Image (tube, rainbow, N blue to C red; front, side, top):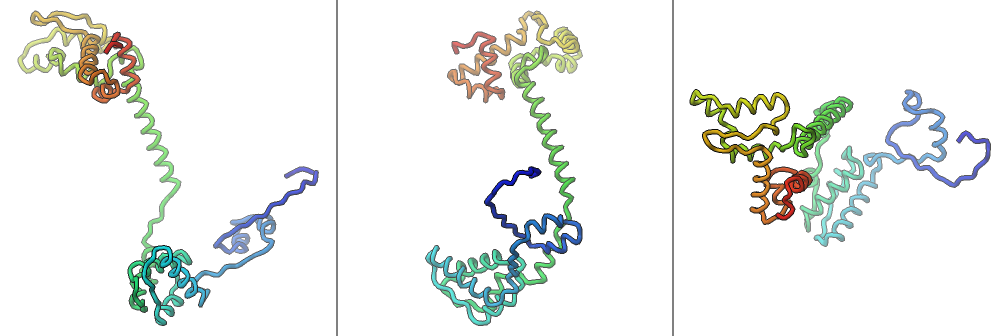
Length: 278
């Protein structure tokens, strides 16, 4: 292409269409120069409804092939059934004929099929027209844009979840799921709610809230509440992971599933807390 040197090639191009290409050229929908490059030998194949006796021959061929392959009983078509085949408009062309004949061969095995029976397997012209007219006009470009938007939104959500589970950043040291497990095992973290119910203040919750505002919730020092030592988040997390490992006999995959975190995060936590022996 674009070279002045003659180069020999040995190719053949076979192009097929169900459109009137000359009309498409006139309407400006197909390049005229490309049409004459491709249009060397034209073979016009008429639609099935215009092929007369070929319809019956094809029907017999499809019947014979289906019966031979599936070893079903013989099926015969009466004269009025053959006339119906030739008069039908066949909007689905040869593929529809094959589908109809195979249904007849399957459900009418061993019978002689007349026009009334055959008509049950062929949708009428009116039904087909109503089906085509009732199809909505989709805006494929708008639908594609909506799909792309949905995919990008899901991708952003997945990335956000991965960052929270993998503990990316200095303020996300403990995964959300482990934090929830920790809250179940340490009631003092919920003393804010209890304090509001009993009209009493919780100094630990106040310190925790201030630390969260500063982005250093993991750095809150342990303190005594009613004479009991409050565990740090690190200690609670380590204990939770260690208990889960012991409960699953050291199987890390099951442990990660129980804690609802990734195995990668679990491996990192095990190394961080020196739990390799588990």
